[in-house]
Length: 127
Length: 205
Image (cartoon, rainbow over all chains, first blue to last red; front, top):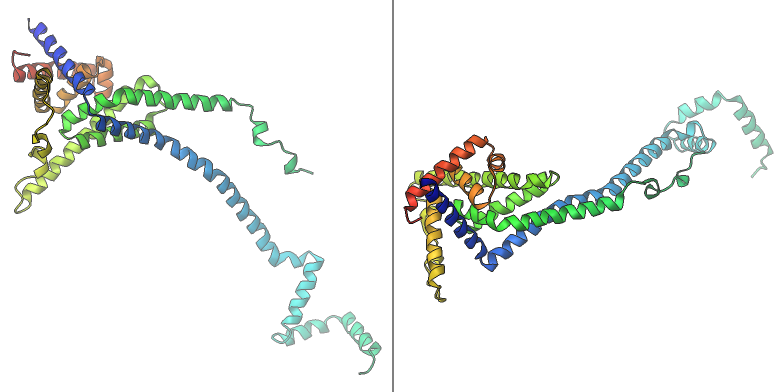
């Protein structure tokens, strides 16, 4: 008897609950639909962000790599390249006023340069 | 010499089932949407019964949807329902806890007797409805209101067990997974809930 009473309670409460679900007003149904769409949208969004960031990340890494490769070589390139050596000489000449003594000392160690300079001065017509 | 431009493009190298993966993802999303659409109204009503507030109920349902889609969508679809209800019940419990803390704080504050939101009925509920309800519907509404009162008077675990088993139609194993307890506990909670409701609602039920 008690089991039967309980089952009727369960059955009636279930029916009432499902009726109340069916009778939900349109405004609430619409809000639930919006909530569902927002939840599903949120799973799609991070993927798009990741897809957008991937090429940007690769490009940034490439730019940094190039910058690191080029930047140090601009300071040390004269050591190995002919063009770079001429730039270094220009630097020396440009700083001659500041470090005149050092430059002259260096030139004195180069007799070939003096020979060349003498010959050049002799061959130059008098002004 | 190695030349980058001689490499085939990534698309040419990829011989995996890319279009199939896209199709699977779409199917997967559609399945998830179908699941949520099927469950959302019942979940909302259950949350509303527990929280007595439509907006709060909507918030916890939306939160449960978000958490399920973000964290558990990759799980087999057969596990979604217990997972969803577990998240939902956690959300309901969190909100109830926050309410009770807020209520305690409000009672300590001088000059504040009670949290006005907690017990005061919604004024809109008392506004007369111009459309005369059919007597059957009115009786149903009254019976549902009585049932809701009875359910709210139950301990949380008994209420959960009753709603998941009886309203959602879950079996004992599924309910146990949703409640995070043993199947034996589910049976005990459910049985006690039915007897307590019987006591409250009377023989007419």
